[in-house]
Each structure stands twice: as structure tokens, then as C-alpha cells.
Image 1: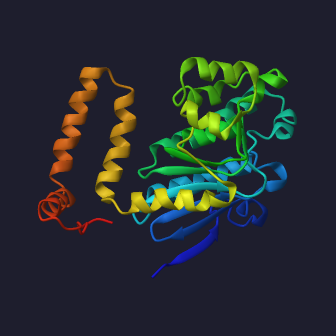
Image 2: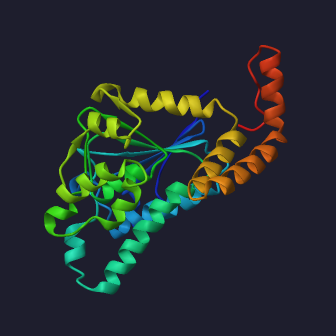
Length: 275
């Protein structure tokens, strides 16, 4: 039986306009967050960032969530920061606060205990490209396009460069950052920015294939793996192996590992204790 609940973001209680910016739907362990500001191309306005941060914080404490899908309404996945809002506040302190909040949201995605999949149905530019790059996995429609286009308005995409450079090779990243050119979904796949490209009509099926596979695994293993993978990337080789070995030793003591190994030996499907 499938249980589905849909609710507005809790980020801005009492403010219907802000609350509707981000929709949440929970279905059998999969939480879908949909950015719902198509007229602004789902720009990362102050309210959108606040909604994302608050909702991600809620999800981090929700052990029923197995996987998160980040989606969007309209033609664009996300067009980056709200440039009109930025121009209306020409103060360094404002910009520092804005970029710090955006960085908090990106890191909240990275640090979330469960995998996050970007469902990219349209353009993802500047901080919108950063948003897709910050997710653990990304599936894009054929029509999707990616760019870090701040350079076109005289602004180097410095914060998007952090996420971009952790996904694609250095020279690929610099080409995108220095030219501001769009790349196709197929090119993004080739460069390592996304995992899969689907026909526009098959995007949901491609995302569901990944969420189904993730939710079929042990929740302990998935949560352990995501936390370990991110931490070891920043470590020197010897330290990374020591950390990985300790993580595996602790993981081996989990009930699910005993069940998984016994099921493998017995040639049966495992029945996970933690789902």
C-alpha cells in the first residue's frame, strides 16, 4: 500500500505565498521537494532559500525518509539567485548573508543523512547548476541545459564553482565558468555533472528507477555510506583508508549486515531490520 502526503514547506508558517514556494510529498520513504516558483524560474530568492533550509533540516531528523528527490515546476529547474532582489540591496553585508545562506543550503544537501537526487527538467544556471551539482545524484531530461553564467553579467560564479569543481574535471569546470556557455544534458552526462539522461516523457520513470533501488537497500548501509563517502574525499589517502576501515568494522556489527550475508549464503532475498 502506498501512503502519500503532500504539504507546503514549514519554512514560513503563516505566510501562504512563501509556504507554497516549496512543496513536499512523502511516498513510502521517498520525499519529493518541488520548487514551486515557475514565474521566477525557481530562483533562489531569500524565501526560497529559507524554505529549502527549513525543510532540509526537518528531513534530516526524520528517520522515515530513505531518499529525497529535488524537483521543480515550470520550464526551469532553477535559474540561480534572484538578480532583481540582489540589485535592490546593494550592500556588502546583504550579499555576504545571502551567499552564506545559499552555502548553508548546499551543505545541508551534502550533509543530509540520505541520498538526494536532482530531477532536472529544464535549465539549471549559476546557483541552479550549483544546486544540481550539490545533490548526490542527478537525472536530467533531454531538453535540460546547464550553465554557470554569472560571467555574462560581470560576476564570476565563485560559489557555484565549489560544487561544480567537485563534479567535473578542472578544465571542464573552468570552461563553463569562463565562457558562461550552456552545455546539453548529454554533455553534462559525459562530463560527470549528472548520472543519467532521459527522454522528457521518461524523466519520472528514470528517477523512480533510482529511488526504488535505493529504498530496496538497507537504510543503515545507505546512511553509513553517504556519510563516509563525503568525509573521506577530503582526507589524505592513508587517513581515508583508516577511516573507511573503521567505518566498515562498525557497519559489520549492524543487524542488517548479518541478515544480508545470511541471505546471500542461503540464496534468498534479505529482510532488512531497518527500512
